Length: 120
Image 1 (spheres, rainbow, N blue to C red):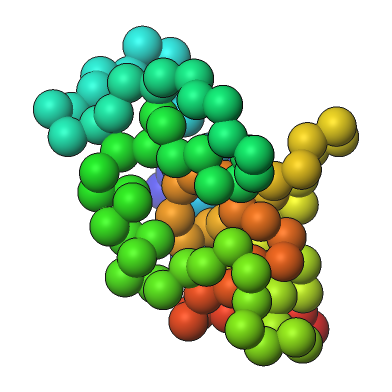
Image 2 (spheres, rainbow, N blue to C red):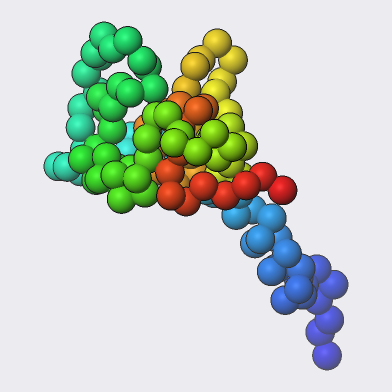
């Protein structure tokens, strides 16, 4: 009888899979040489007063997804803003806009959408 000492149990596999999920979500569509679909927009620099409103380079599908989630740049509910949402990705150093785990494009820290989830 052959014994394998380096076998992974089902529990270990499940735990490793769960632990790698956030990294996969953050890495989303990032990749070298990725192809563009016909519906994806080509980035075109635009001079806007609010960089969080600049959707150049965001695909039509992603813009529709933002609308489906009813995203707005200014929250109508003072206590429910992107900055205190569990799905918000804070802005990088020197940038004004953050991101969201639900959709692509810039997100205003004082914004809001219908999928707002309080930080725990």
